[in-house]
Image 1 (cartoon, helix red, strand yellow):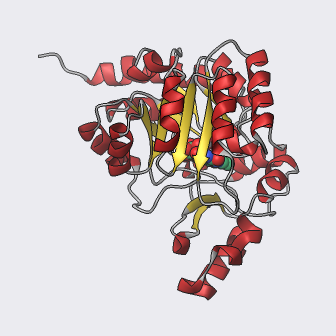
Image 2 (cartoon, rainbow, N blue to C red; image 1 turned 120 degrees about the vertical axis):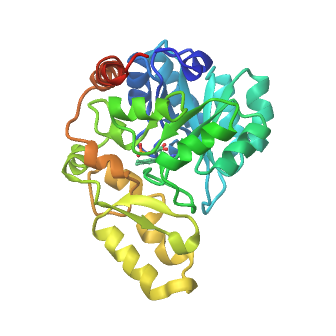
Length: 327
Ligand SMILES: Cc1cc2nc3c(=O)[nH]c(=O)nc-3n(C[C@H](O)[C@H](O)[C@H](O)COP(=O)(O)O)c2cc1C
């Protein structure tokens, strides 16, 4: 399939794996890219720029195809050394960066000077237009359904995507709730040039996470996510578990008085390795999309991407093609 996104990134299929903390290691990024999509290493999962440089080198060993690095700008206790991470990306010969969180303006000149294309993740039309105005090459439009941080507007993709299509000139992909060929065709119908998936890619053979995490996604339905940190305006969609219940109880009790320090144990850095690597499913809250309800198996990335593309082609040719009435 050829779209403005496949052209921009030099990939075969318009399917991107979004950056995911403690999931986006070289193994997954390379598997997605080898299958014709665009895999992404999560920059800040690496504890230093030097470690990110090693991870990028490892990914180059695993694939000759293009892959991306995600750079997330979210509130954290200690600000990462972003210039050093950017240097590792440039020196590592990476050609695509996915930015997320705060406005990425500070890193754009260095990335663009190095010939790197930037796709910024946005949860609203106004942020997408801002990204376009500062020179981002594309945006990933994340609807309210998404795993991770959906923002504070609560607009689902059935509204957000056509709104983005009406306003944007740069290409965009649909993110949040994407799982299969139906998602891809729906996204294309609404004006997107492809899809970005997070949660779906966790339940793949190559995702380097504990088997408990993959089984939790298969067991979960679309009813099993919750929004946490709303009172802090840092909303995150997570899978319901004991930690989520504890956190929501604390939020209810503390109300408007709540501070980030009050909930550190449930959300801070140490949680992700415990969940993703040790398989300790109640260690804290972890991002998960409503799309868990559409996940029923653990295919390889190649099987998943091939299946999405053949389903999408069949829907267009057989289902939709069969419905059109010629004049
Ligand atoms: C476990 C997990 C961790 C994530 N970590 C990050 C991250 O570190 N940076 C980021 O920009 N997005 C992160 N995301 C968001 C994804 O890149 C993607 O935008 C989102 O998952 C799309 O929604 P979906 O899960 O419905 O596919 C994360 C998502 C998940 C599920």
